[in-house]
Length: 245
Image (tube, rainbow, N blue to C red; front, side, top):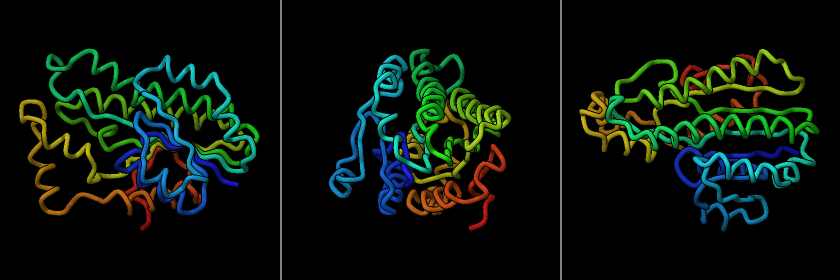
């Protein structure tokens, strides 16, 4: 049996990933600040939702001290962790960034992902095949003005995957995957930024107007095909746009 943990499932790419997994009959433990009523109504027997603010490491730590994760993974042969939850803000030059928002971004984009990866590795020890996918970004590999926090946090996921792969833990595969530019709320957030905050805003506006943004559904389908395929984990860093269609 395959089971999956997905963070940030209430909208955007996370919702599309959870939907595709559930449509394949794969039970999903979904963690987000808000629930997804649509998925809950359609898949009441397969979806377990956990309401948790992942910007608060102490709350995540208390939840991990419980038995929910371990009990969910107890009888699976293949276990998946998809660290999808993330935030773009704060956007702007260094002096424009609210330190509290910086902390929230690092806690969500990095701390929660690494905490869950560690707990997942321990709790899924019974599974013969364990796979961790960090949803990264092209911003992890190319710097953008105004995105110093986002770039740094996604680069941290990339380097985490590189280091974990060197551990060569039996039965454990990991990859930090950039999924491309997707038409989600994050893109709307980008377009709402001022040019002072993000000088490249017009580039992303043009992509949206020209239909150059990928859609969450097809992106989730390709992402899961890669995650469940034999090539997953052969390299710790990948870009979905470079993979075969």
